Image (cartoon, rainbow, N blue to C red; front, top):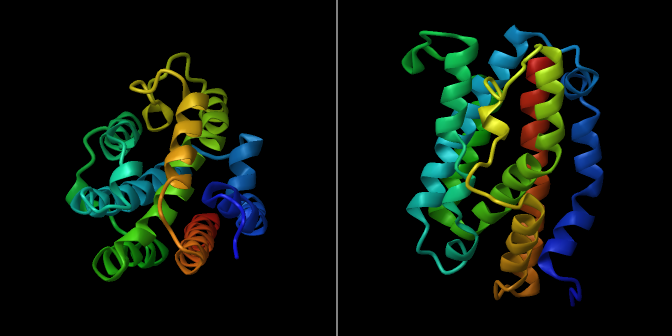
Length: 210
């Protein structure tokens, strides 16, 4: 019997793989402020493909009894990634962007579970969006310093202008997770999917490290 709330269970069970993700060379370069613009553009391209499909599948399942409570339009990132891509690569064309092997594997997972077991999308929403709302805010400042950005231009991806209080929003998100009526089997499945989400992210980061 899992006595912990889902949000607590997810946080504890993904702790090790979360730590592993932070130790990938690409992320270490990011935190050190030694990432170059070309590498960052490659990251933005990967994120475009990831959020494009994730947000399509979440939208398609927005009336699902488990998805609806954690479906927040304020979190949508795809349009903001396009803003950043235009900033760093003016005149870029979406249809000319190449999807890497690791990214393709990642987004195909969204498509598979969206049909077979859509509640597992919750795990990917949790990993991606809470990461953006937490560590992503640190990375925003790193990007501004690394590229000598005096304004928020170039950091649209990390901006949540529709969220007045990020800390309060994160608490509301976790509360919504905890209110979902999952049994222990479902909680374990979602947690395993969250671990997989981190592993898929690691694969993308490792590709970017090469």
